[in-house]
Amino acid sequence: MRCSLTKNVGFFIVFLNVVLVYYTWKTFNSYEPLKSKLFETKAVKSIISKSSINHVSKSTTVVIRDFELHENDVSATVQSFIKVFPNIQIIILSRGLPYPPLQFHGNETVRNVKVINLAAKFDVPYQSNPLSLIKTNYVLFVPDSSRILHRQYIQTMINHLNSGEKMVAVGYSQSKNLTCLQANLTLREWSLKFKTVKDDCDFVQGKHAMMIDLGTLNKLNDPFLLPSPHSIYLQTTYFKLKVKILYGIQFQDGKPLFHSHHSQKLKIKSDQDKFKKLYQRFNVKRVRKENGMVENYGCNRDTARCFGSIINYTPSYIYENKTMPPCCLANLRRTAQHVFNTLHESGIRHWLEIGSLIGAMRTGDVIPWDFDVDIGFNRDDLARCTWLKRASSKPIVDAKGFLWERATEGNFYRVHFSKANRVHVNLLPFYARNGSMLKDAWFTSMGMDFPEHFLHPMSSIEFLGRQVPSPNNIRDFLELKFGRGIVENAHYPDFKFKFT
Ligand SMILES: *[C@@H]1O[C@H](CO)[C@@H](O)[C@H](O)[C@H]1NC(C)=O
Ligand SMILES: *[C@@H]1O[C@H](CO)[C@@H](O)[C@H](O)[C@H]1NC(C)=O
Ligand SMILES: *[C@@H]1O[C@H](CO)[C@@H](O)[C@H](O)[C@H]1NC(C)=O
Ligand SMILES: *[C@@H]1O[C@H](CO)[C@@H](O)[C@H](O)[C@H]1NC(C)=O
Ligand SMILES: *[C@@H]1O[C@H](CO)[C@@H](O)[C@H](O)[C@H]1NC(C)=O
Image 1 (cartoon, helix red, strand yellow):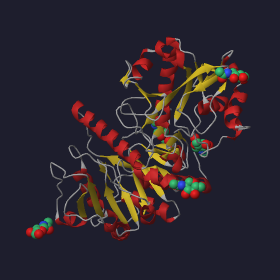
Image 2 (cartoon, helix red, strand yellow):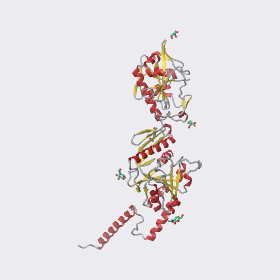
Image 3 (cartoon, helix red, strand yellow):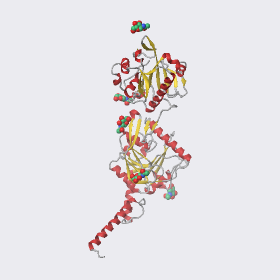
């Protein structure tokens, strides 16, 4: 077959291009940067490498923060970085003395690597701050069990920060894909809600290394809290700073950890503790995860009620311009459900009262800033309920763990979530006289007596997802007690009940 000269040249150019594309691809994808490459003389290569290595080492500090003392791969992780960047600064922040001790080889290593034990120590003054040890512009937070094989990757991360990103994240080749999360942090409601998104991440989830600039780190209340870097994202979310996932590059996993059942259990417990401490520290009491699961922090049956003092019927959270902590609200709802069940079963005539009735009218729920539930009942029926009867002489914990007691400040009753956790429902006794429902001395400043006809017939209203008994003509009933427009106008936080 005959080929023309142009055809031959054309074919040759195409061939050359294919070769070029292949080697370019190979160069950029290889994890073995130190292997000699085609089209690159050794001398040229070593100059490029040296300046790049120096640049990375001068601008980046590696921080290893989150690892377990009992089982870790920190030494080998450090070795891996030192091998690629012999002069890079590495800071290991541990919450105790690692044992077996971390071991580094070679004199270089010992010079660049600092191990800081953050456990409480008598001879270390309060002001000691690991941040003061960092002199570089960028900080790379590296998870335990990491290997870096390609120095270009860190340079790529630096380039992204140089061009305006605040934080960049890089995943690991053998670990799960990273998840990008949007977080809604509403401190007023003590809550944090996650949603999976494609980009504009507030949080990154999954094993990853994260680079951040020192200026941003300096703004944070405590950049070294555990779990890391989750704690950083919690704080940067407050400042609306985003983290960008670099999908094109990946670090390598090191030694697999936590194989045995025992060490897995320790690890899970350790992680739970870290989240608990972190969220407690920043007053996040409710976390709704991206899969819809809700985790409550800071209140259960055994702990004290999760808000502080109530002074003049104003709880501390209202003073802080916040709503009732969500876990408390959940406990209050549980207590109210229990009380409605008990009153219903014992056949006591009862009805929803004052603030709770306003809440029911508005949203079928407790008003967001309220801290208790109020139920009126007919005093003549008191003896029908064993727990109420017994509570009239002394406080008593019922079969389901709720505490019934007579209020010390007046002739009414309270049912608390538990003996320790005193979020509660008020039970307010009334009796009928001459066409009116009257109360004893437990309430002073507002006219609380009301005409009996509001209870004949009894009505009902939806509250906490169920129908509960209520007076008839609820609006008239409430306006009689609180004045016109109360249902619409009751507002946070001025609406206070004045008991004596
Ligand atoms: C490391 O330093 C010690 C003294 O501090 C010295 O004896 C030894 O030769 C050094 N090792 C290397 C590999 O430089
Ligand atoms: C991880 O991400 C890559 C690239 O986006 C995708 O091809 C792969 O299917 C993902 N793997 C999993 C397990 O989701
Ligand atoms: C965040 O949560 C609050 C309170 O739950 C809600 O009002 C607000 O719309 C949410 N914001 C976003 C962006 O989802
Ligand atoms: C609550 O809000 C008021 C008015 O917006 C403000 O004056 C006060 O300082 C806030 N209190 C706290 C503890 O933040
Ligand atoms: C009952 O009410 C009527 C009218 O409201 C009043 O005249 C009467 O004195 C009241 N009786 C008692 C015992 O309070």
